[in-house]
Picture (cartoon, rainbow, N blue to C red):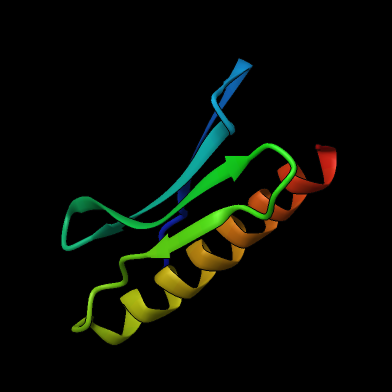
Length: 83
């Protein structure tokens, strides 16, 4: 059984310095929403991305994290191409 990732997107009407927004991915792990990835969308530059994948997971959670990271990457790429 896999759970769906929660992808939060924050885009600023006016960029804050060179930051135009943020994307964060959460996946339920052991009953809690765990942040697995974060991207800062920059004006005129590639986004900065950090991953926070737990090092120990039950096998079914590995698939959930992989699906969440794939959805996260797709959303960041989509928002980057809109710029």
